[in-house]
Length: 293
Length: 272
Image (tube, rainbow over all chains, first blue to last red):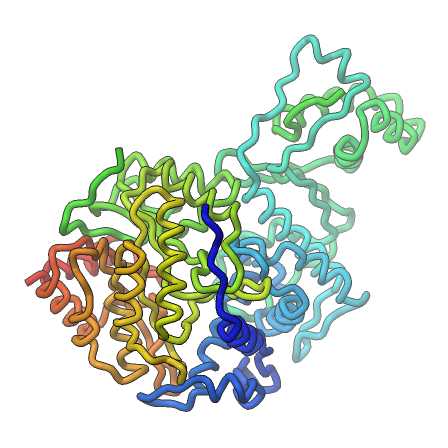
C-alpha cells in the first residue's frame, strides 16, 4: 500500500483533547454513574457546537458515557460470574479503575479484559468485601471467580487446534519429550462451588449481587475444554490436576519425577497406574496439541 | 467470483446472539452483514459460524475499526486480515465509517466525528482510495450519527460526505437512521442531505432504531424498531434513488428472528 497520508496537526490536537474527554471518569458519587461535563477541557467545548438543542458539553457527555458504558458492558460480559458476585455497581467501580489504567489500544474489543483478573489480584485485599447492607463476599472467592471467567473467555476464543494423537513411535519420545498444551483447555481450581454457579450467573437477569454458597470442604479441580463450540468441565482428582499442571510446565520425565516426589509412600504404589490413566484421559480430552523433543 | 446482491435485496445485520439461535430455520433474507472485527481474530467459534453462514447467504462485511480519520496509519495486520476475510467470504463489498475511532495509541471503540473542512475531504478521500485498492473490491463509507458539530466546519455533512466518496472513487453506505438522528441533533433538513447523494454510488442503505436521552439528544442505539420518521426518510431515499439493497441493524435488546424479519419486511412497504 502507498504511504498513508498524514493528518494535519490541528486535527491531531483536536483528537487528543477529544480522547481525553472520552476517558474522563464518570462520577460515581451518586446512585448512578453520570458524566461530569464540568471537568471537560474548555478548549474542546469551545471547538464544538450543537445548534438544535443542548449545550455542547452536554453533547460531549453522550460520547463520554458511551465510551464507559460500552467498555463496562464488555467487561461485565467477559466476567459474568465476577460481576454477579460483586453486583454490577461494585463491579463497575473495579472495572472503571482497571480501564483507567488499561485503556484499550486494540481494534479487537474482546481483548479489553485481558489483564482484569490480574488487576483484581493486585487490588483486592485479603478478607471480605462489603457490598452494602449485610452483604459481604470473600475476596479470595472473587479472585477465583475472575480466574475462572478469564479462563472461559480464553478457552472459548482459542484458535482451532488439532489434538495430539500419539503414535506407537511416540512411546520412546514421551519418556524424554515435552507435551505441548492446547490453548483450548484450562485447568481450574476452586474453593467455592463457582463453576457450578457460573451458568446461573449467566442465566439470571439483574445486576444485584448473587449469594455465594459455602466454602467447599476440599478444593475442587476441573479441566475446562472446548469441544466444537461447547465448553465442558471435567472433574479432576487433586494429584491428577497437579500432574497436568506439571506437564504443562515441564518435560514428561521431570513432571513425573516431581509428582512422584510429592506423593506419600502409600500413593506411590498406585501412581504408575494412575499416571497411565490420567495421561490417556488427557490425550482423549485434547489437553495437548503435540509432543516436542 | 463475488456474489452480486439483487438491486432491492433485503439483508440483516447478523450479531453473535444469532449464531446460537435460529440458524436451523434459515431466516428468509437475501444477504447478511457481519461486523468484520468479530471475524478477524484467530478464535475458532466465529470462524465456524462464518462457514455456516457462508453456506446460506451472501455476506457483506461492515467494519467499525478502520479509523479512517485517525492520526495513525491503520494497523497493517488489521487491513491484511480484513482483505483476506473479504476474499474468503467473497464479499461483494466492504464498508466502514467516515470517522475516527482512536488516536495517540488509544482505541476508543466509538465512531467519532471530525470537522467538515475541505482539507479533510482530501485526506479522507486519499485514504479511502488506498483502502479500496488494498481490499481489491468495492469499499463503501457510511455516514455517522453525531452528537456534536465543530465550529471549525465550513462544509455541510452531506457536502463533506459526498466530496469524500466522489474524490476517492469509492461508494456510499447510506444510513438513513443516522441522517435522521444527526438532523434532529443538529437541526438540518434530512431531505437536503438526500438531495446531495449520488444514488448511482449507493451500495446499501441501513435502517435502525434510535433512542432519546433525557437531555433531548437523539442517540443511535440500534436497540429498538425503526421509527416512522426514519421509514418516511427511507421512502424518500427510495423515491430519489431506489432500488438499493436495504439492511436492518439491531444490536441491543435483539428480538427473535420472526420479529426481526417482520421489521425488515416493512422496508418493502416503503419502496414506493
